[in-house]
View 1 (cartoon, rainbow, N blue to C red):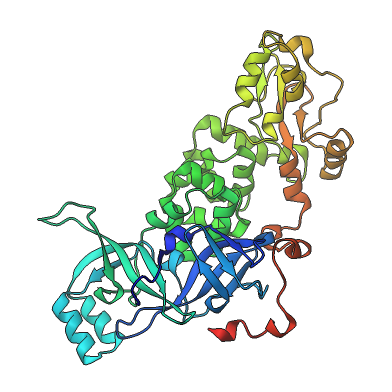
View 2 (view 1 turned 135 degrees about the vertical axis):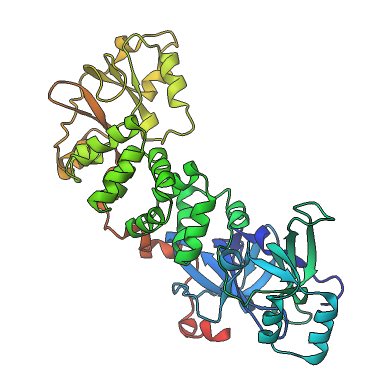
Length: 459
């Protein structure tokens, strides 16, 4: 490496914006693709995985990268928009190298191997017997002098507990000083990968998980806390949800289901065999399980099957100030925070008699001390739980609503249907995995005709 060559740690690139030469955004960087090489030689960086409009992941060769910094990536502006598919000889840095347990090569062994030019297989065999075990926290890549080629040159690792050093001691070493990347990894951790994507929205983190291998997906899911995992599961395709939940211990699976919105938990449980479904419901808290059981009793494409059982419910003697305090809760979705439902006690669904609703705009117009019973809207008729999806969609569209109350024959509020849940059932079942083809041109330039087949060959 030439003196003064820029070094970039890969974790600092996660999620950074990718721009064309004119400064227009192309997408966001989601991973770095490398090719491991034998003999302790540093891996060659093949390119970047970039997520463009519609959550499509494409491959950007390093030959088309003109600048890499911790805050942005600049490209030549010519992209191949075909979906990225990982090849057997390729390794994803963030997805597959972080959190790996490898070994530091003793200096004398490293020097002997380099002098003898031994193969990578020999080094990996030795690594299984000698060297201190460490955990990979990050790797850095550097551009080779006078070329566009990049390679991985340094590994940032954390040492384990030792008699003469504290647990958690970190150090940066040359790639040749570490062995074990070729060995199959059992029980790989995921804490550093999770930390790298900590700021991603649940939908974006779900997209990251969807593109990981099943093994790595399970490891990352195990490293997420219950609330974060619940949010991510709600954004994943059904098959990914079932796969992840089935690999959790039943007690934890029940905790995650409790943390999910009741309607999403019910949708997920509906995908499971009846025996497994009942076991998990039994392990859940009785109050949480009761709401989910009610949802499972309704047909899927009805108001009862689509509703959440946890809308904002207040009594008529509550004030505007009370209502505003409730809708400010950060865990509420915008659809649920749009209005409060005024009911007689009890306040939990099924409630006492449903009286009407108050939209948040009305709450902003009236004095804080105003009682909700004085401003409640009683004109809008609620939905019955057996209202079908077409009628439900027409109701929301006709009255420009983003959520609607669901009331039973006795007049009790059962829950509320939100527009996002309606859209989930109007779109094709695989909509989370389908690109928005019509929107791609708005966020990234299309490849030149001659570029359709050549981009992958550049590797």
